[in-house]
Amino acid sequence: MIRLTEYQPTTVDLSRDEADELTALTKGGRGAAGQPRVIERLTINGDDYDVTPGPYAGRFSLRSGRVVEIISRFAFDDLTRLLGLGDRATLLREAATAATGGNGLMDLIAMAFTREVERIVGQGLEKGYRTQTFTRPPFGGVPAVTAHLNTHAGRPDRLVTTARRLTTDVPINRLVAAAHRQIAALSYQDRGLATRLRALGASLHQISPLTGPATPIPAVASRYREAHDLALLILEGRTSLPTASGVAGVGVLFNMTRIWERYVEAWLATRYAMGEVIRSQHRIQLTDSHPTWEGRADFVVKAGGRPTAVYDAKYREWHARPATSELYQLLAYTSRLGVRYAALLHPATSTAKATFRVGDTTIETIAIDITGGG
Image (cartoon, rainbow, N blue to C red; front, side, top):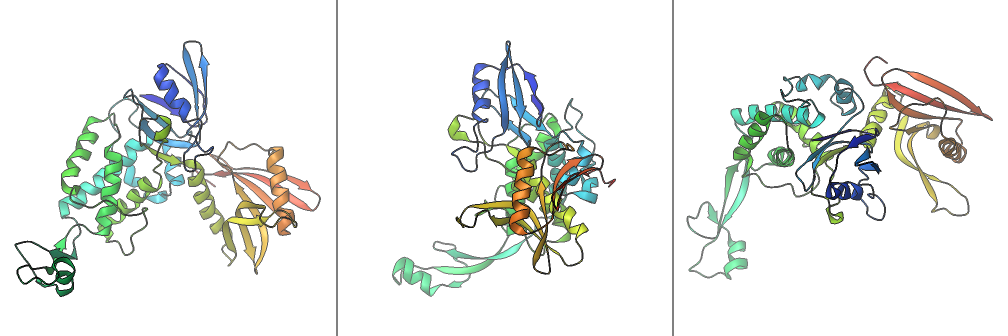
């Protein structure tokens, strides 16, 4: 296994073909919408290569069969909060895999998901009624006149019937089965975990694939709640590698930048609890002469219908002094919105803050303690 840490260069022994595959992942996002730039940089270092991943955590395979795992720079306990598990992180406390290094993000999420689905299967999958059409014996239910006319033009020697049948092919099971199919395709150092995932396939193989993007299921039964949330976590974090560029296939990669933005949105909501409105990806017209020239602020806080603050989520290590380009960006946003406060928000394991004044505008860089201590 090739084990990397986001944003940190690692010297790796790669074959020429493996280096070519990883090089293809440094080009994502340019002229190919939706293709992630998983690898920030790959350079030759003697007979080896220095590989620097971008803001993704997860796992995928190369054509050679070697598995690439990108782990977060944060400890797992901290990462569970970024992933939105919060107090429910205890769900992931089953003993970690015995294999060396088997304590990664994908192993632990897969373990928790497997345990929850095993429990559900043991109790029996959720069932619901579905209308089924029969065009050949044995016929069940009652004649379907319209379907008969459409299918057989009303021929008296043919029959079409419909009946309501109890089935496990219901939306919540489709969501769970889709997540299972995704993580079952990955490699795991713990062979026991891989075996458990394969065994679940026998109970889920009859469930239809999702017909659209993964979305929360309303009114989920309590016994499904944890599996439902973990399935969404797996499927929302899924990133398809750009296979057209010669990369082996699909992996599960969590875009930590988007996850940080969701965390920041929740963090802001706790600090603006007096009826203020927090709008994400707020459009800002940058010029008076070209109305289509727009910027997008990560978050704009409004009170009384008027903007009061601008926040930009930065999934990078906190530095007291912002980059010049970041300062220009925030000043442009505050000027166009008519506000006098903006801040850059970074994830960290302790709190820190630096404040700058530009005329009558206050700019801050804030390190948010994601460990729960602040």
